[in-house]
View 1 (cartoon, rainbow, N blue to C red):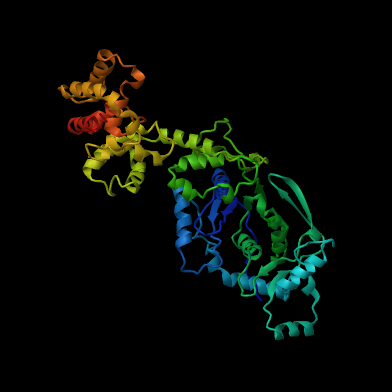
View 2: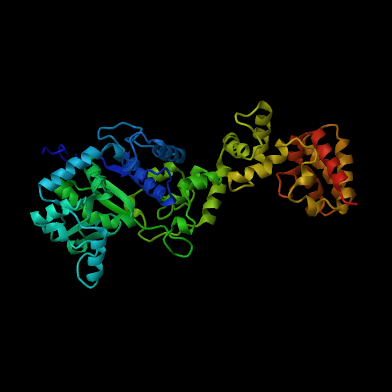
Length: 501
């Protein structure tokens, strides 16, 4: 059989791959890994490779991969080679490389690096239970390593479908982890691991190692939960004939921890990036916060951009201590990033959330665009998630005169005591020759605070609720100015009519 790997890894700039499971749902830990790999490649002028680990999918099942690509682009990441970006070592979907894995599997069989294992699940379990106190790897006892031909024939006659196992050699593997230093693993602690299922589907241990060699990957950055696979992959590299001085360099990132100090998991509330996106988090906040879990720019600031990440990133400076994931801190960073947007960009980003709430249609009409453009800046420094925008802006987008009487604070504020301030505000506002924010502010101050002597902290609550249904609203004069004279006065009238006697 000819060697399907033509030549060794070439010297030169680093090649880093991000190889997530292509189910379309990136978790926060996945994105942190992607950010560190991307920043390593960009900081050094290297190559960032996106590889979709989608074994089990069909070649035409592109939806999960497309979702993965869209999410990464939304986060602001790009790559030099990938499923949608041709390169010299494609294809970049594992589902399109099955023939290559079979070719290598056959070569491992021909050269004695692999063998067929006919053990049933029940037999494996029984032998594990019988050997609880036996030394050596507890995953597999190498039973089929030395089967006689007649036993193989007997198994085949029974109709058994074997899996392909790698023959782990004696000795040990020593490698250097960029974050953890030199690590030695005794091969007695590494089982003869499965390379390929009985139906021909390759496992991670085969496909990933083959791809890393074939794609000339120089640096493998991944979570520490994959550290167990490193000696296995190095063994496959050797079996493929890769010179040791061309082995990829490893860096295993520490787990993210929840607020109880446990490994962050979906079960404990860790969400996918798509979920955070739907909850109104902006990509600038997610990449800032996740990149900062274990690393900070040379200046030590905790608010930074992707450009700052690229300019200052050194993989060896990532902390080996597992960082804690704090949702409250992420939300604070999100609010900071929202405030940093230009007013036009902020308005553009809130539109999908307004549409989801049924307040606008996409594309926007010219009237709605005017309201959004002028109304959105009023709330930009008041929210920490884009999902808060509909509640803050609904009063501008719903034309009903009685909108305020149905609001969340209507029952508490629109009481009989509100009659006097509502009447005074209505009379003062109706008399205004000019309807703009300064004039509205002066009229309300005079009518409610100066004339009625109401305390400023509560004087305007009945008007706020009559107009918006809420106490926590954008600045009241600007809100009334945007809403307009007719609808503002109509809502004040509707509120007065709704007061209990």
